[in-house]
Length: 365
Image: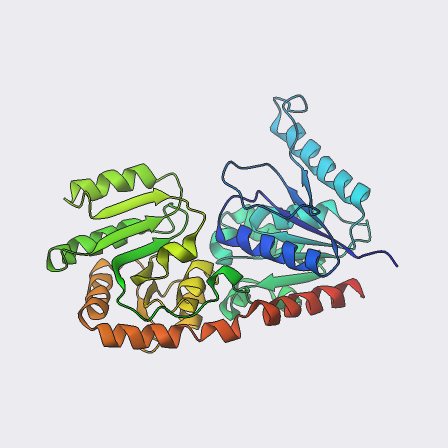
């Protein structure tokens, strides 16, 4: 009997939360004896590595295939992706994020390949235009399965789509499953994530500026790449925080870098089920997060018990929450200990089996 063949579709493997979840799933299914193919539109500069034996196919059209007509280019991309499905003949297609989900459904029509799509964030933002909203609320009816991040995401969709949808959690990256650090924590406030407008790292810098003089030994370190990185470096300097705020870019050993930090902060306007927050909690770091839609941080954090929640964009509240943790080390330590209990709920062995059971059920019809 041949191994089952799973195809995973995403724009690239550029280092980000959704891409990490997809790569983790690819590695898991590969370890379970599946044949795994990852299809991406392009190859990014800063990508997650995948195991030898997992196939990788690029679906974008080449420079020679590109026309001056956007319509022609779309048709060529459409047919190239459909050709990949015809040639590979996977037992199931799993697609991640936005337009990819719509393309995966439409390009696989009538090929008798079950297609599952995964919405990774707030649907209102992932399908931001009228056209995309209409497409999501109609085309998704043709999917064989729909995976959402939180219960509130269901509200975006009509009943016919809600009935097909399930909520599946992200599994923890095994690198973040380790013993809590029990010594004196490093005087670092850390954040991890793509440096873009949605992540709103500017708010963390502003909040740190409000309290920096009271905590002269502390630094703020924001790990990640993105279009706003240089602007934020300049912004911190303008606030007199040169030497106190660092943006070192992406690093390979995030768990090692943040393990002993005093506080982890997530400042986004919108997040599904944020991996970076989950990972920081698993390490036992005291955490602060915005209580942003579609509700992932609010599902992870019981305010005052295993973390602190801040309204999105509320710089003053973030500064107050930082002071609460920095002023009361015992309180912060207890909060970190409570946060680390997510290791049980989001254990890779448990979560990955849930994904496997769901996808295999769809394959079996």
